[in-house]
Amino acid sequence: MKRPVGVLISGRGSNLGALLAAARAPDYPARIALVLSNRADAPGLALAADAGVPARVIAHREFGADRAAHEAALDGALRAAGVEIVCLAGYMRRLTPFLVGAWAGRMLNIHPSLLPAFPGLETHARALAAGVRLHGCTVHLVTEGVDEGPILAQAAVPVLPGDTEATLAARVLAQEHRIYPAALAALASGVAGPAADGAAALANPLPGAASAA
Ligand code: GRF
Image 1 (cartoon, helix red, strand yellow):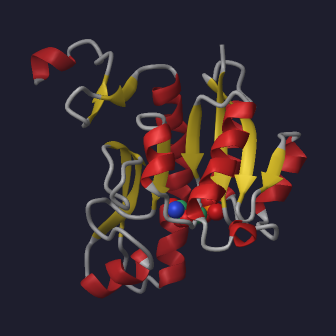
Image 2 (cartoon, rainbow, N blue to C red; image 1 turned 180 degrees about the vertical axis):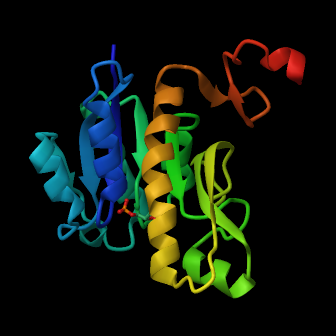
C-alpha cells in the first residue's frame, strides 16, 4: 500500500518533480496525494498538473498576519486528502509549533547544506565564502528549530576550484533529487523514523548493523 504524501512548495518544484517521478514506480511505498503552494505563481504547480496530482494554492497573503489561520487551512487540506506524511520541498514559510506538532515525526524537509552547517538561506554562497571543500544536502525530520530536526539522509559533493554559486547549487541539487525520494521511501516503509529519544533512527537496521555498532 502506497502511503499518501502531501508536498508543500513555494517555487520551482524540482524536488517535487523528483518525488513525483520516484512515486511512479509500482514498488515505491508512497504516492503524492496533494500538492499545496503558498504562492499562486509557483512554477512547481504545473508539475503537479502534468502528473495529474491535485494541487491547491493556499496563499499566505490572504491570511495577512494570521499565521495560525494559514496553517490551519494547510492542515485541513492535508487531512481532507488523507495525507499521512508531509514533505516540505522548497516551502519558504517558517512553520509555527502548531503545524510542526501536528505532523511530528511525519514531516520531512530538504535543505541544501550538510546540516548542521549552514542552516537558513544562501547556503551555497556561504559555503563558498567559508572555503569548505565539501558541501551537500540533508533530509531531516521537521522540528520547531529551523533546519534542526533529526537527520535521515545526507549527500556530500566536492567544492571545486572555480565553482560559482550556480555551479555548486546545480551539483547539490542533483543529489537532492536522489536523496529526497530515498528518505521518503525509508520513512513511508517504516525503515526509518523518529526514535524514542527524538533522534532519527533506522527501525529495522540492515543485517550486520548491530554487530558493527
Ligand atoms: C532546494 O534547494 C531545497 O533544498 C531548498 O529549496 C530549494 C527548492 O528547490 N529547501 P525546488 O523548488 O525543489 O526546485
